[in-house]
Length: 499
Ligand code: NAD
Image 1 (spheres, helix red, strand yellow):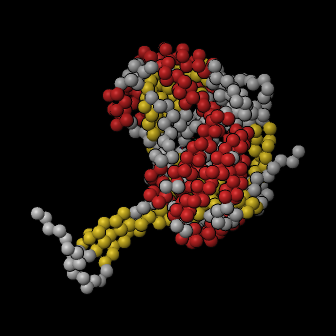
Image 2 (cartoon, helix red, strand yellow; image 1 turned 180 degrees about the vertical axis):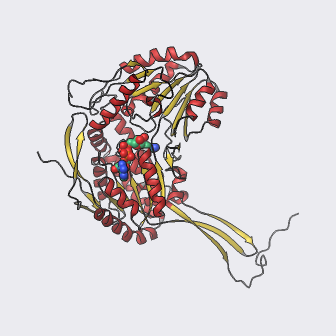
Image 3 (tube, helix red, strand yellow; image 1 turned 90 degrees about the vertical axis):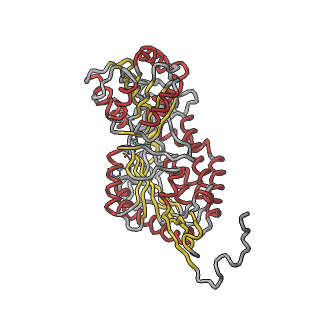
């Protein structure tokens, strides 16, 4: 059977890459090749940049509300194709179909929010900063932007950026993850139907050469990146060297603290989703469970019982709660972390190695895995595993939990479970992490609140989507204005006198 070969979408057309190097796309539940992806070259990037650059002047001059109308149409088209996008996503990425539906819903949410451009993009003004002089500021678009995105959210992540960049008047290029290019291909078929002006939205497939082509291209103004921390740091530094705007989101190691007063029965379902949902491959997945004091015993028992009940299988089966890992290599990486945990002396309570799903013998499955009595200096407590592996680091008290969180090199998300409002408020106030959950273990901000970690989880000064985003995709023009006039200030009006 001939496999589909992914194409690029440039200047409103589907075109073949100029490359001679290709990679495979896999169905992780079946361990089967399902498509071929070009590892694009600099010529592909240049074609896309030229198209985006040529489209920019007219797109910038299109009134903001007219630009938003394309997004209104796109939202409707996404709703009509909702289930199909989710199914393509699960087929290539592996996650449970309900997780894919959630991802598509979040993608659409950003399209919806970006339609508010007429209020999001307004500047400011102050009259009479001196006699007869007014001062105002416009936010103006900058040109061509690009997004480079990871394998774990093949649909949503590009759309954390694209709607806002476009609606504020820029043109755009998306570089999907080479592991999961089919979802954006499906999404861009819908983009094509909606009929944006040629060159306004473009898609280039590939891996490092395409990334470097984007980073070095003189006609790209800025890069939005999401991926692992070493790549994020590299992107940030290279954009610095070439003078581009950059927001580079990196990895995570999210800690969930459970206070002795927490209601464990109430917390368990959402904790299970946090640690094992999307097979642990969310940047806001729980990774370390930190029971405070003597709640550890109850938590351990209830966690193991609930984790054993998780239905693991193909993401396309409605009953599946946890799909396979996204790739064979990634499965090996997760397994190697489990081996390291055992070797370093952590206590393995639930072992997800050698997990088989009889109907899918070649799938990249790892079952829910739970470690207890993990020390903070162990590899599994300090490095990002990005799989269904829960590491329990017991802490004696609240201050020890804070210390554990602050010693972590990442600071993407964190959560605390408690019934004590005083502890919760102190936690929010002191904790040095970008996204905080109070009795909410996956604290992903909605589209109209900005998203971003601190420390090694984000390089750059702007969080993404929500209010921060327009500042990233626009620059401020400050105008100080005075008009020569023959009218004596105030003389034309009969100002009421104060009585
Ligand atoms: P990755 O860094 O390997 O790849 C991300 C993108 O960068 C891909 O498009 C890839 O082609 C490109 N890339 C990879 N290595 C490169 C290199 N050396 N030079 C140039 N380009 C390169 O990340 P991934 O494995 O696809 O995704 C998983 C990571 O993403 C995890 O660390 C996860 O925490 C992180 N992530 C973070 C967030 C967040 O919001 N902070 C969200 C999702 C995923």
